[in-house]
Length: 254
Image (cartoon, rainbow, N blue to C red; front, side, top):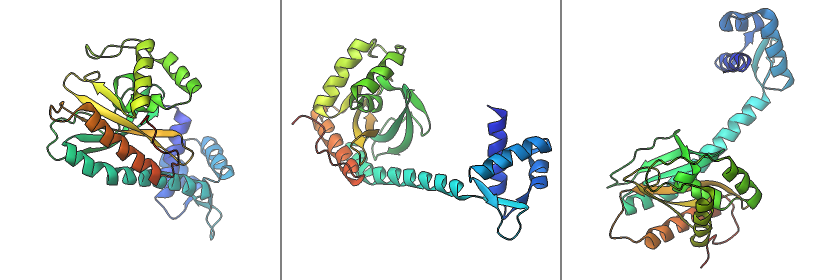
């Protein structure tokens, strides 16, 4: 990790946990040269991440931009809460584990997980990641990107077989993504893990752009067909999107 960034973060945490701190207190806490500490503190002041204490200008406290970033996090947390309200009942109904994922380059990061009643498998944890091409989450995210962005990402993927069912090349993935976009839900048929089948659908924001995806995972249920499960999941994803301000209507071909 970059040392300056690490020290900056440590300084911000130190200031956040106190009513006001002096430059000397910062230097003593972080154990760094005065000149280096001064440069970081001066930069944070210019960026409005810290500001002088109202009653003592020699002490520093968090500034308005630190508050603004915290508000952004709160908004993201609200997004997860909205997803949870819609996903938990369906996870219990389908007896599956549900996830919410966001894309980071050519991978999907899991930001929410709920294990429904009767679910048998739940191997992924919040904060973990998997390749976009092996997961239902990733396929749903890729399928609804604009063509240029989608091409850029596909060109960056290094295809590695995780199971015998894993998609092996860009051409096969493109076919899968076209089918995903047509029906409104994606399928990971034991492509990421040998026993697991997953179904996913995209989540859109108020600008009608895909920002995340939801999935439901477990051992294949012989009672429900892919279409029965997929139709429930895409409707659930649509309800979440509408609550987030999406106005594009059904994102699948009727």
